[in-house]
Length: 137
Image 1 (cartoon, helix red, strand yellow):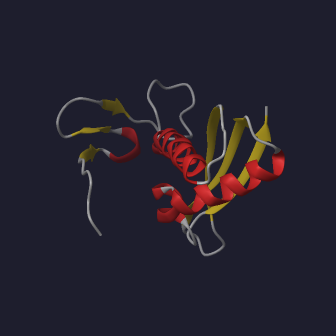
Image 2: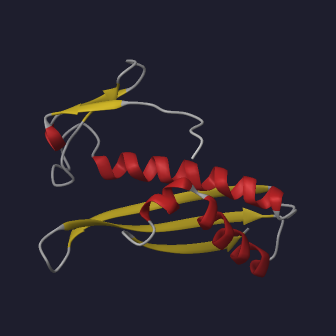
């Protein structure tokens, strides 16, 4: 695989610590998802933001490749964490996509194709339950 870009982040203190990019450009104090009244973000929130941005970008690229006249898109990623029957933890993802400029059948084909292109989708495929929902606006 040809690598186009790499970044590095470091976390200390786990879910109650701090994470940041090693170049110092961005960092967050972390809190557990169970600490709702504490300032900070949790890893699931960071993952949701990254997945939403990546999928929306993959959607635009895929629409161009499919020659679909998408005029606008918006992707929301809902990320959950839970415990599996064996006691291990895993993520659960719902991707909610809104597109304009195409019909429902085209939109469904587009999100399924984008799901094959998106690096986050490829990284989680087979490991994370992921559901796709599309709305034409």
